[in-house]
Every structure is written in C-alpha cells, then in structure tokens.
Length: 509
Image (cartoon, rainbow, N blue to C red; front, top):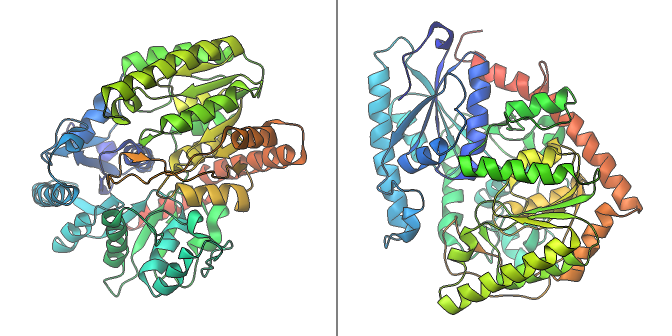
C-alpha cells in the first residue's frame, strides 16, 4: 500500500484492477498515469505475482500511484503454470480471493477522506463488476484490445452465432454491422473462431460481454484506441454499450518525445525491466547507433508466444538472405518451454549457436531482451516484424514504423487484418503448411499452429523495405496515423477529452 493521500491526490479515488500479465500491466499503468495527471487518486490492484513484475525493475512507478496486492495462491511469477491445478480452479481461486480483498479494501477506504468512487478492470476480471454491484459502485471495463475486436465478441454473444459458424467454410467472409471490413475464419480473434482450440477462454470472453449487458443501463467501456482510428467500431449502433476511446495507452515519455520531435532516445521511458535488461538495452541502442537510418529489420514476438524451432529456422532463412541488418529478439524462456526432451532442448541450443555465428557474419544481431519502445523510437529501424499484440501494434503505429504482421493467436489475427486492409500501415504474412495446434489452453503459453515460409517472410520485407509503391503507401500511412495518434493525446484531443469527461463524472464538473 502506498503512502497517505496528499492534497494534490484528493480528486476522485479510482481503483484499477488488472490481470498479472505484461500485456495487461503495461496499458493499465499508462492508463493509471493519465488518471493521475488529471488529478485523480489512483490505486492499482493486482496479485502478488503481478506486483513482482512491477517492482522487478530499476525505475520507479508513476508518482502518486498506490499499489494494493492480494494473493491468488500463486505468488511467484509463473508458478501457476507449474501448478497441477487446472486453469478453471486457478481462475476461481483468483476470483474468490480477489473479491474478498476488494470488498475489504472498499470498506476500509469508505472511512477515509477520498473513498472509492469507481472500479475499473481489465478484460476477463468480471468478478470486479460483481464487487462493484454489491457495493453500489460504478464499474467500467478497460478494454485493452481494439474496439473492432470488442464488437466481434459482442456480436458473437448477441444474435450472430450462426453467422460465426459459417466461418468454418474457409471461403466465407463474415460481415458485421459497423465494421468496415469483412473477416474470414483466419482473420477473426482466435477465441471467436468456431475452430477455436481454447474453449475456456472463449467462454470467458462471452461471459465478459454478458456481464456488461446484464443491466438495463448502458455500460461504459473504456477502449485502448482513439476515435480517428476506429470511429465506426466505437459508434457501432448495434452495440448497445457506450464505448469510449482513451488510447493509445503508451508511456507519457514516449508521447512527449514524439509530440516534440525528440529524435534521440532518452532513458526515461517507463516499462517493466530489470537492471540486467537495462545493460542489454544500452548495448542494443549502441549497436543501432552504428546503423543507417531506416535500414534495420526489427523482429520481436512479445512476452507470451512460443515460436517453434521450425518457424525460427524459416525466420532465420529470410533474415540471413535479406541483405539488410536486423535485430531479432529470441527470449531465453523459449528454450525452457518449447521442448520437453533434453535432446530436443540441446538441438535448439545448437541451432541458436549456429544462427548467431551466421548472424554476426551478415551484420545482424540476436538478443534475449530489448526495450521495445526505445528500439522502435530509434531512427535506424526500418520495419517491425511483430506478432501484432495490440500494445506492440500501437507502439509501432505511434512511432510511425511500418509493420510486417506475423499474428499467432487471440486478437492478433484481427489486428493484422486491420493493419494491412484498413489502416494500411503494413503487410501480413501468408501462412504455409499446417502444424498441430497446442493442446494447452493457457493464455500465457501458445505455440504457433502454422509455419510461414522463409520466402514469404522475404516477400513481405521486400514490400515494406524495398522501392515499390507498397513501401511508399505504407510509410505515408504510418506517418499519418502517428500524427493522428499524437493529436488524440494532446490537450483538447479526442482521447484526452474523453478521459477528462470520464473523470469529471466523479467530480461534479
């Protein structure tokens, strides 16, 4: 728990509850920081393991932010994956313990000068809405994926089930009200697809929508997007909820850097990283300083996905034959997760040693970690090969970096569709031959179900880094959306005004 409330923090007390995963923690922190800057008192609630992810770093949290934690029974980061408890039991345990903690927290704070006035929560934590209801408090979902993806889940839950089933036909294109593009099965969020291999998470997403629509009143959904980017999806008339764009939720230092055209990377970007990772960041940026402007291919697949050895080999082929410098992030934990047999693990290590030797010869670089925001902000970066997680997509967009979309699961398949067909800031890889889908239903460990050939990856790199019309169009649009994203966050911009109006609801202004 943080220090006592100061006079400057005596605005409305908003509690923000987030799931303990990097993809949830980062946008939630940036959202909380924005609330603080508007004069709110903010308490961020997460599990003990989530708090460990926040504090295992060199930099401090945003000034004035209070942290409150509870135990879900899996206090060491990653321990739930090693537990023999099934996912359903883990989820029930977190919900039960979290609700008990939150009820007690609200009761205790009711006696203070600034009692809790609203609960904000990230997707799937529907128990927070139940706690708010029991305490006669408003609750608001902070949707950390695109508005378009929310609309898709809304329609799946409200009358379009048969239309989604038709997507089993690969040639069928699903059209939905208020969304300007159609979707094949492979372009839907994976949990909305009729061939979805993760029934637990599909059910959880449907329950999320049902919780929002269970009351006659019009529930609010704060969305990590901005009006100019997804106005039709935000205002879809068939979606009977009030969707409010408050994004992009990115570090405030990044916003300032872009808005004031600061080219060189500072050391103040807020993120979750360790002291050792800071040293690696400095080495990476020093290497980038030696590269020509817009010359480097940056490859990173986020913190969750496990890329198969075969897919790594195809990526390696493409990069080694591409005749362009590249920076490739291969996380250390991928060696620990992918293969169970010691022989397979050793084979992967040998592959890594072999590829690193070849990489050095062609002027590339492989790292186990880097500060993604700092790398994307570097003038040497020419394109970003990304899994299209929404945080990564927004960071690339806000820095005007062309994308090669390489989606794997969840919203990433839809994000990639929007990147290429709606916003036109990148191109998508075309999938090759099938591989077995992972049987593990965990959200945090997913194996890619298909292999993209090296030649296809090279094709996409040539399109965005070459000399043709696609390159010019992508770069022009990337710069356009970069400017519009920053405009949304300026004083008087759409997202800043929307968030100010949300805070004003609790101040009587």
